Length: 404
Image (cartoon, rainbow, N blue to C red):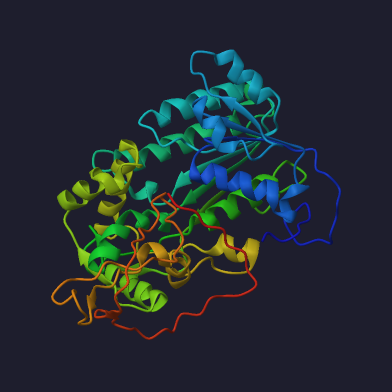
């Protein structure tokens, strides 16, 4: 939960005074955009921090994703109607630019920035970028490097008087590798007790929970200062990663502690990773996103992700963010290996494997519920390898997480 703030971003006493801020969030139908919208419309700390909230989506069908937020206005992006884009921008003073997960994200973001410049009203311009983009090489990691180009475009209005108020109060948020991307490997975790990643055995990275990224973004776009955004975020490049730097085997240990059962790390090559991401379990992932993930993994293998950045989380919320064990506890139903079962001898069942019993676990956030079959035979667990359950969940803190 975000703290109360003064104009400089510092805590203040409770106030029910409604802000006059008018916010536009692009790619509102995506998991990141939708979660930020959910925070802004349901969390008491944000509800009074803006007057109007608009979401820009990329198809008519996508509007249904945000139907439950009846106070949010939705607009559909039309690349051919540039005047409509300018009009949309002219009605807001704050824009959170979330590049869409599409191959043409650079072109779309460029169009949106051009519309904001022409509108001359978007004082607070916030871009959600990617940590590691500054270390990416254009010929080896072009999808990652694209974010640096977008950052440059987002910062240009600050020094261009012809853009009016647009971009006078900018901020770039470089979010690290989303921990929720690990849900792509839940099939291997449940079926084989393995976490397969193409990062090698010793290379480290610090996955960040999507909920923590959403909290940072919500804090930034609702912050207020004498020149637009609060002084503690205005003109800042905020880098945010998870709180713990882990190699693959260490990530598996954290998962094992959280799940109470053994999960092993498996180092796979890039071709195997491509096959997994191109299979049925990666069908919900856009091709551009698959390319981005593979490029980020290559960045890990090159040793360019050996750092953590938790300053923003500590400054804004007083904690480092969701720990790996907390993440795996949150998604225990998706990662916990399914146990093999044998049937005790009984009439008519000797030598035959029992059918799995009904599962009480929740459906996966990727939309695939656990299967349930009837079984009258008594079952006995065979593979229940217990681990030391040393994970402690930090209490009194709200961290919202979603699937991919």
